[in-house]
Image (cartoon, rainbow, N blue to C red; front, side, top):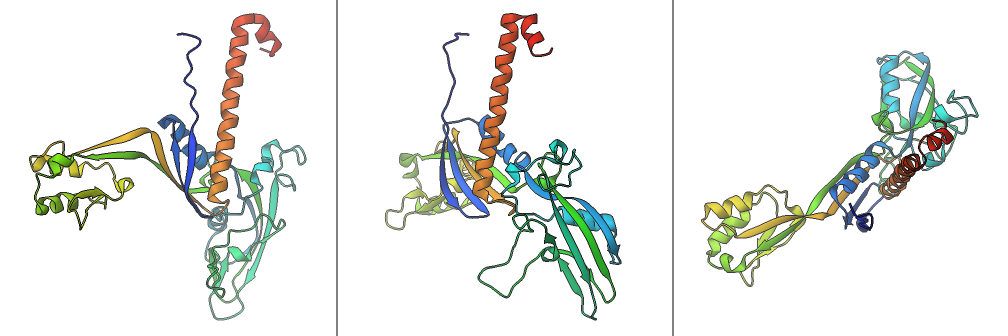
Amino acid sequence: MDGGVTYQRFPKLKIREMRDDVVKFELRETDASMANALRRVMIAEVPTVAIDLVEIEVNSTVLNDEFIAHRLGLIPLTSDRAMSMRFSRDCDACDGDGQCEFCSVEFHLRAKCLTDQTLDVTSKDLYSSDHTVVPVDFSDPNEPGEQRGIIIVKLRRGQELRLRAIARKGIGKDHAKWSPAATVTFMYEPMIRINEDLMETLSLEDKRSWVESSPTKVFDIDPVTQQVVVVDPEAYTYDDEVIKKAESMGKPGLVEIEAKEDSFIFTVESTGAIKASQLVLNAIEILKQKLDAVRLSDDTVEADDQFGELGAHMRGG
C-alpha cells in the first residue's frame, strides 16, 4: 500500500438539543466504527461514583442485608469529580484498601420508625462525607413541596436500619451501577427523495393511502398544493413500509430512501450522575486517550521492527 495514502477524517459535531439529562446531536463526516466506539465508551467506560461496600450495623427491616446493599449500589450519585478521583485499586494513599479521601466517599444512614405510619427510607436519608458526591435529586423544581428520593426500604413501628457505606469510582464495564448512561442510541440520517413525476400520477385518495402506510409521521400532504411532502425525515425507522406500499400500488420507485453512511443522529440520556453534555465530553476525552494508546503501541511495534531485539530489550521484553 502506498505510504502516502491517508484515510484521516475530521468528524464534526452539532448540538440539536441540550438539557441536564438529555442531549441530542449530529455526528458527521465519520463512519459507523467511530459512532459505535463513542456510544460504547459512553455506556461502559466513562467513570462515575457508586456505593461499592456496605457495612450493616442494625437491620430489622423486611429486606435482608444483601438486598439492601444491592439497592444502595444502584442509587446514582453526583459524579462531577469522578474523572479526577483515583480507582481504589490504584490508590497508593490507602494501599488499595479503597477507604481514603482520594478514592472513596463515606455515607451513613440511620432510620427508625417510631409511629404506626409506614416510614419510607429513601436516598435522601444517606448522609455523605463529601458534599460534591450525594444521591441525585429527582425533585421537581416546580413543586417545592415534593421530595422524590429513591426508596430503599419501608419501615413499620419498631423497625430500624443503620449502616455505613463506601462509594468508589468505577466504570460500567465492571458493573452496570457505574454506568452514567440511561440510554445511548444513534441512527443513520435518512435521505428521502420523492419521484414527483410518478407521484403526480396518483389520485389524492391514493396519496393519502400511501402517506398513511408509514407507521411514523414522515410524510404529509400540503393542504394548498396537494403535494406529498417530507415533514420529518428523522421519524423514518427504516421499516420499508412506504416502499412496499408503492410497489403494491404498481408504482415502484415512487420514493427512494437511503441512509447517509457518514452522518449519525445521537440521543444520549443520563442517569443524573453527570450531565448528559458532560457525559459526551468525557467519552470523547476517554476515546482520545485510547486512540493515543493505540498510536503509541503502533510506534513501539514499528521500533521493534527497525531495531529488532535491541528495541524489545530496551522496553524490558
